[in-house]
Length: 218
Image 1 (spheres, rainbow, N blue to C red):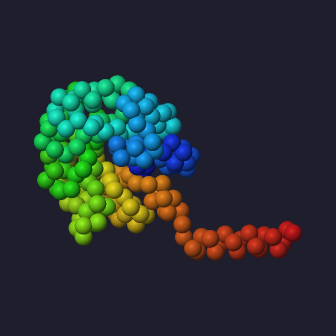
Image 2 (image 1 turned 45 degrees about the vertical axis):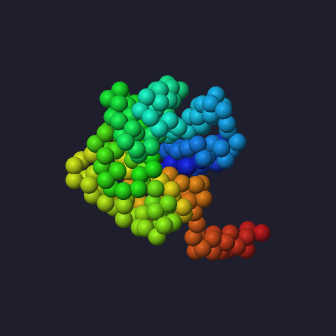
Image 3 (image 1 turned 90 degrees about the vertical axis):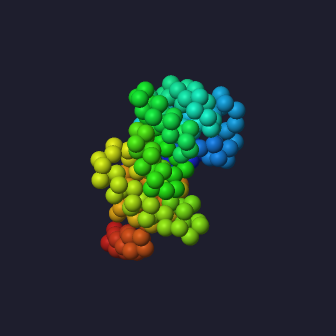
């Protein structure tokens, strides 16, 4: 399972990279705005800055909702850096754009996926990644993990190459559950990754080891 961090915060990306388990980054306009990154040139520069920190894929999202606009934006984003993956929304024009980019050899991430039918369309159009938002489904009392499971079944049935990128991860158990279900990638906040480190018995055991060492070596 690949670990992506879902942020535009460079310090958090560096921290995740230093942990040694980071495989990539996902961003979106909301995350850019949260970090105060505004203006087209500043946003484009920020994507390049992110690529300089990580070695893996960096999803950069288009903001156009028409085919021509998505193509123009996506081609410009793809030219920024070899690591850039063009993030395209799951709408009718977006599916057309996914197919266009796929035919051109430009890697894509189909975002805002909330149903297995949408995921099937994205795979048919040649998306590199599909991003089902399980956390947002959980927010409306719908089983987001079940969506991951259904997409995995269908993709395996037909040997689609599209990778399932479990998005809108909210906490560490989401990561564990997605790993059990066979999601190819998870993307979430740094806290969801660092949470995997934690166990009270580890803390208790380490404290005892250190205390015993101090007794014999003080």
